[in-house]
Image (cartoon, rainbow, N blue to C red; front, side):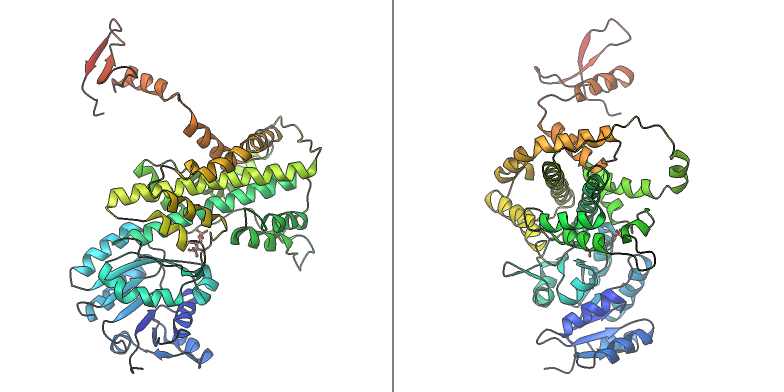
Length: 482
Ligand code: 6PG
């Protein structure tokens, strides 16, 4: 083994340290580690004397300890800190070297950084890394962008530390420049939707079914043996089982009900709005967190009338099964919308993203890993240009089996005054998608009335405007630009 390191990690907070340890644990890797404050570097190296680390005290030492092509993964907080480290490395690296940003960067920042860094001949790879602290240590799902050339060096290193699903490492070259961070962003948007949907299912089971958190944990444990098997269902059961040591109450009852976020869900929605892709389930999940955090408004609105009626649950088994089906169908919508956003992003930014490959690398390591991803991988294997996941025969059948229960759950929750924004919007999306006629025709009429925005007809080619303030006759015209 050469004296120098074949890979380096800058930024040794928990994610960076764990990733460095993961890298060092794989045969053939020697890992240079550097952190702005030396204490962290020393802590890592002292706690893991067995690991094949080279501890660098300065950025110059770090760069000098890397074998060529120098390859360094930056694991610092997204934003200005990332730019600062990139600049430090870019000043010292040589053409052909590789800088990897493994943080949750906004993909447009990654596109900008790639342009700046590659102008110097240095490769820049924005890589989404999912799986939290444990994933970083034991095997994350990795979504690298950047050039194909950089991936030649980087790919085998990343494959050595990634999770393995069905015998395949959970890493693929997603596409050029910001493609990796774009896909990671959508992963997080789906993560938000999945979490919110599970939370809504819990709320219904608790409020309408009168189950205790521990009983809901049991139900989720059962669900985790079937179609819904996933990391998020599994950990939700763990959270629901937890009892607060201080009060003896269920943990979930002593936690303030105001959900935080670090921004990737918001980015998914903002980006999808710009792309014109309806990610309504994801958006509702983001909004639900926002609403939960409007403490003053919520306190002021606490006594507003509801006119809700009690949800009489006659057959508990059937009730639980209906909620399960509603969750499954809504979850499918969230994934379908997320994959639509990836396809639209790829078109907009000229990336060749293989949706089937993305679904495969999400089968292990990442937060949204689930049995379900195998079905999605099958769907894209059968038809790589599938219009929507919902149109895959397997999923069409699954929704056909679930849709009755889905409607019942949304309707009854609504009558009972239980908020189900993600369940309801997913069902409305499904109904909108399958509707042969939408009231969008009326919206077009309204737009033409007040703004001469023009419309198309179902029976004739061309663009039309009605002279609403005149004799109301129709004229053929050119499309309005306003
Ligand atoms: C992952 C996670 C990770 C992080 C989320 C949390 O894939 O490992 O998505 O990136 O836990 O960003 O996001 P919020 O704090 O916004 O919920």
